[in-house]
Image (cartoon, rainbow, N blue to C red; front, side, top):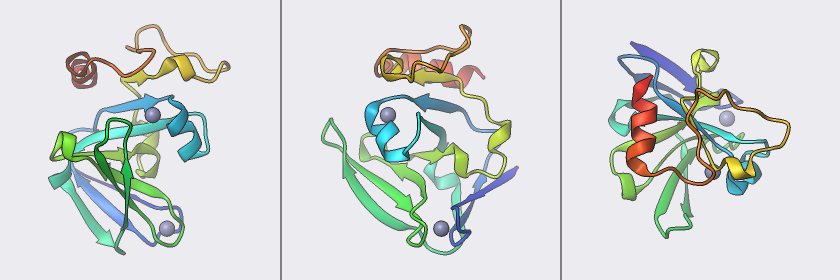
Length: 147
Ligand SMILES: [Zn+2]
Ligand SMILES: [Zn+2]
């Protein structure tokens, strides 16, 4: 199936070719809070090859992560909504800002990371795996694939 997304102003639109709604996680780290101007970020994992831009042209912003990797952010040059990012440390995988997807209400997070920075008024269902900082990669992937 095809799901679509886009930025706040509508200048950039994209579509994802997926077999099911993609797995989503939330990050509560301080960088995510600051960068989103909100309480946490919500990201969908998807193979980069399954993303097609259908309107506009995202601009690139390269951010050096704490581990020294170059995270390449795609954003709308007009309204500056961040849309998705890739990172050579995990080639071929894109992190799509889940709130930019038209069907974002159908996505439920399967994991939470950096909960030690989580806003005190938030609470997470005990059934959803969470980690105080970054999750061990194998555990994290297992949680996301579980559905
Ligand atoms: Zn825009
Ligand atoms: Zn984060």
